[in-house]
Amino acid sequence: MGSTVGWYLIFLSVLSMALAVLTLGLVHQWGQRLPRWLGGRPLAPGAVTRLAITGGLLLVVICVYFVLNQAFHFVDRGWSPTAVQDAVVHDRPGWDILRYYVPLLAWGPLLIAVAVDYRRRAMR
Image 1 (cartoon, rainbow, N blue to C red):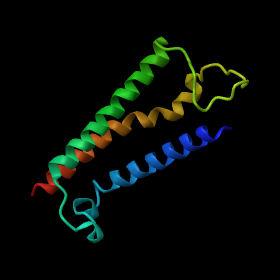
Image 2 (cartoon, rainbow, N blue to C red):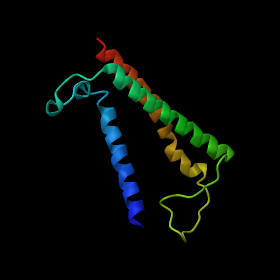
Image 3 (cartoon, one colour):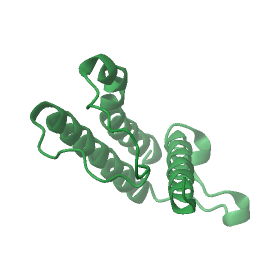
Image 4 (cartoon, helix red, strand yellow):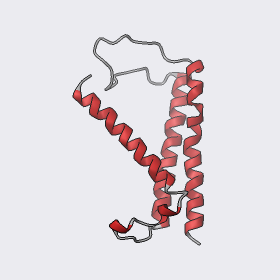
């Protein structure tokens, strides 16, 4: 495994964890104000909501594309930055494996719902 691939995977892991923590800020009180060491000012609910809804819509688009690509094979499997040069090529996973990822389809719509609720609570 090359050093570029290692950093790529580490970056994706750190990014996904950071976004998950930021999502928790939409449902907790600490998500409405910057920490004291960053000034302690309140966050603009409109900006937070727009950013969260944009992220939720992006997740919905990615999930719809994934489902449609699995059903209609728009794009064949191509190069992957994590692939090893002489790795064994496996068949596409079937629905017996993909069913475990179905709950991820709710991630985008639920993020949008939480963002709308955040705006409602923050605009009081």
